[in-house]
Image (cartoon, rainbow, N blue to C red; front, side, top):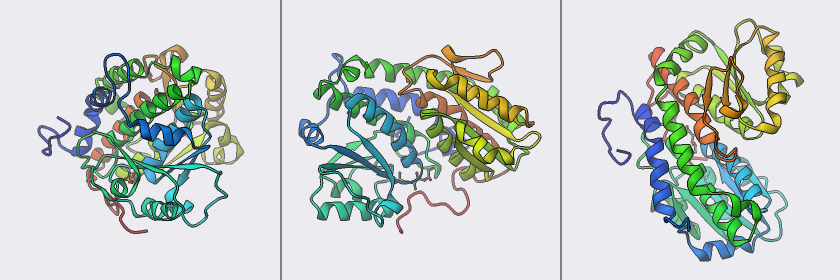
Length: 364
Ligand code: AGP
């Protein structure tokens, strides 16, 4: 149960929270939609959003990575240009803002100081704001004009898993609602309820492969010092999050890259048996990503491919059923969360409380 504060039969909160993700997704569908597909969110919020000419998504860490997936969702479904910004950078280097900006704060805890200092600044300018958070009554929730809750249940492991997928799900519902209100055709055609429930099923199919995923983790990561993740579009954004998770709990040096960027420098780091995980999750770039895979293979990399079923090649290690490319990150991220967990366990690390990290960072 996602609301249960005990670990139950689990050895760690992280594994429990990974397993809870399909249920959290279903709870989000139930909370925010009804059987006719109507979305239950404030119409006043939607009015404010319709009046804005640019959405600034402000966040840190994993929430920032969820914001990047949100950019794809909002731009494709609502036609609003989106900038995703790191809270710690943005507040002190305010770019020239659009005429009617709207600020979306993404924060699991709702207490991140870097995000709060941005909120304080933009409130002084009277710009409208929304916080998407897991914690009702948190600072960012109290201080923003509007709040949408993640309904993920308490996330106790320092490494965020279920909040990341919940953030993407809530962003998708908001994008659908706003796009429909703006009569955007792509939004009308996007059956968010159906896609989210397919995603929940897809997540479960990955979670059910845990034994196999643990074997892959052993083969690819246990004895390594470094690992790379590559992809394009949402696959690139997934790479950033997958690498962060591996760093946080297993202390491997891991980096995520846009697949096409590797050959512009980082490929120099590829040695015999360097693990490279590639996300093949987008039809229009699948062939390009596969050529990047060839480039690293010919330098000796040990490649692991996570692909969507319609894009699969016979030797891909992990494949998940087809859902909208806007939401397949919800499924594709699961095995990489498990790679981080299993590698950390095998190395004897404290999975829930990794060294040097705090659950919410309340200093700038
Ligand atoms: C996630 O695994 C991290 N522990 C961290 O990056 C986190 O996402 C970041 O500090 C932002 O926290 P928030 O979502 O509570 O604002």
